[in-house]
Image (cartoon, rainbow, N blue to C red):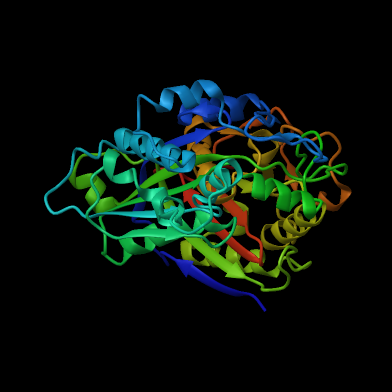
Length: 413
């Protein structure tokens, strides 16, 4: 039995005013968007650790050019994830012009991760024989060490770790804090560093693709882990207007659910995702046919993609409605785990601004089980996007859904 929570019922007063990203595409949201729009696969051979003996040798690593530029942007820190998060915060805050504030503004941080700083601990144990005792620098909360170095924070600071749907959960928590009047500005982010432990775990689960991830493809064989960070700056519309800022998008609603069916497999009916999408639609007073694009979770694993396709079709299709346009970014970017939900929401904001639907870049032979969807071809397509649904799954059955709207946008015909 899935449970669901909804947010921002009947209201559209939370806006996005800044975005930031560090990804396998490079440093900054522009590098991210250029890669996604071009349909460029950014995963490649793993260099961070030895993959000898593994059946797969590929992942999504932040490129060396981006890593070298981090030195000029953020202080040194044992955790690459912490540094990437700080860089993404700095970019988003700059874009949102957060220095232009009104008196009494309250800013909170709502961050997401799966592994936290665990890769730091793993490296320490592997290279020096350290034991967990005395390694407080590897505690999960150290992921947030550098955020205060790049932006002023005087509100709540929250770190969530609810599985790979956690990025959407962090955005939802920030939006809820704004809606409840607890903060005026919410810095919502996710961060992950490529981990040998995660690589080994997904190998054990036989979930890694040997070449590239192929979401929704009949020949898909698995996912590819990746690293990066992404940030959305959320504000109340009133606070945004009072300081003369320009919104990039509107967060119309969010939904979260869990089916508690199995540790690694979603319930075959996709009930939790159907409920999460439904709560979004009801909270935002939107009809299924008003969703212009679904930015799917789409990891490329045989079981998960089929369940997601059926759930999207059930929630948005049928009854003579047009098939929902669906694509996954993970064929290009890999699965950034704790950062994925925010990273893909950043792309959703950029897609609405550009009027372009990203394609399923690695799709060769669409799975017949996904015929109820309009799987966007690899090259993508131009389209007027007024409403975008961004989805995320997590192990254990958790799902999150974010419904984003263009500023002043109307549904595309």
